[in-house]
Length: 210
Image (cartoon, rainbow, N blue to C red; front, side, top):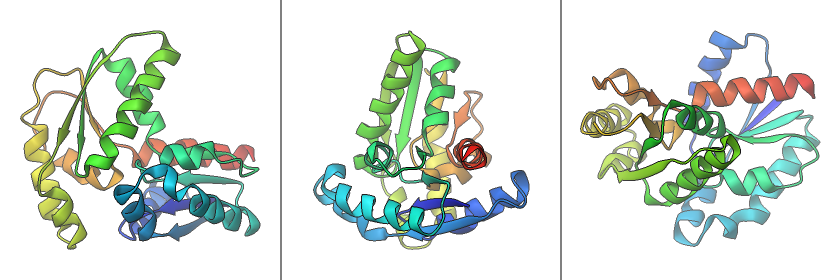
């Protein structure tokens, strides 16, 4: 069984659909705690470390062979926890793909608390690959408010419009999984990378290995 830690219930059907498409038969168990993101934004990701660890312990206690954290803001905190099973952040495979695409990377986010963690992750992957990258960040104003109100289509349109303004990049990284629908609306020729599909693939493999 693979457990997923979300900070929005909107991610549950997204990952269920990806599971059905790419990993049929994989058992998923979703743990949703919106307060984790709210507090991490108010204070810091490290402020919710104990709460994140408690969720991970619960997931493992219920039989999880691996845990995937789908929130970029608290991903590093989850990944650093010693849970006894692999704990992955869904945006790491995306960051590795961005580094391999070229040195100029644009990061788009709908909340500013995600920009720092995503940039740090990309730089970490660049060091691992032995290359230098230039990361530029862009906050998509108003998109998070649309998403939080349930207007996911409006959020996607704002993100897609922001994507299409980026021209001087080798890859565009969508820092949050909730931004993934915008990839189908953008018209840019620059590769646009999102985290849900590659993140789930990596976690599914970790769960299979045990």
